[in-house]
Length: 357
Image (cartoon, rainbow, N blue to C red; front, side, top):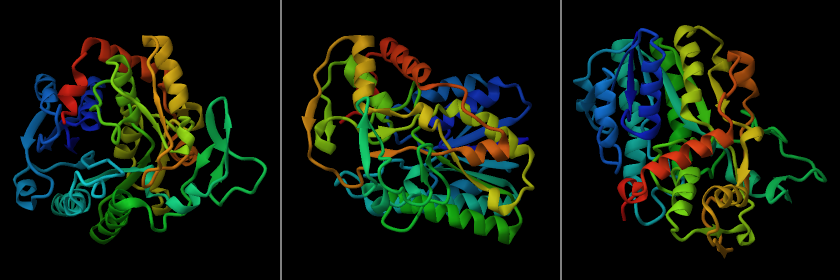
């Protein structure tokens, strides 16, 4: 099977490509990247050594994609993944939309031309901000959890958000581009008769993730702690109790293999949360405690200043993926954190390389 991966030299794309190759499943893996992200160039040589064919192309340029060879499946791992993109004064809102939504359209047109299946790596940020921001939480062991003394909104349980949770605006510019991409992908698939799957991922983390707080908080925090860079607990009283779940992209591969092999399922089952779930969830304060044990003491500044789109608790419930695909993540959070820490030990300049000012 010929598999095209967009953003193949990014953290997620390169991890998927390397893991698929290591599985010796007989797939022909190739992909493209525009190499604009600091650190992505470093993955080129390793992928080429594994026999992965690479193309230089910009997702936003339809003519670039027209030159790519035909594939049986496309895995879309290319995106600007920051919830602050387009509103932080550092990035363009138009470029965000062109990349995340316009790029999806270009990939879907490629799939229409070649009758290729399409797998979109989406995000927990398609879920509505208002009910999440208003969710009553309480701190347990220095981490927020949903309060049990009041009714929970629909689609929320102690296990996390399920796929029925609201996706109405506002969800951030980033979230809206991914939600619109989901809708278009399903429409293209139904209209032009090719299979589509949408995997809404929790926070992806692992060694080699680029060192930006808005794109990979676990890797950023560990690398910054080891390097004794300034760190802050922002918002929520400056206590660091805000919680996210954690998933290594390697754990996506068993799910992807099943989706590649079984495209004919109910349309209602084409969207699923894919996450480490409540078992993987961790607060910044708990992450700091882990870093303290691993690297020694380091001060964290308490800054209660709120930021746009900040949420106290986001954890995804992956029960649907477990039911449909018999999928569960294999790597727990401690193993993921230790992998990141070892990479930080081996690459002390990683923050400067992957996220220069």
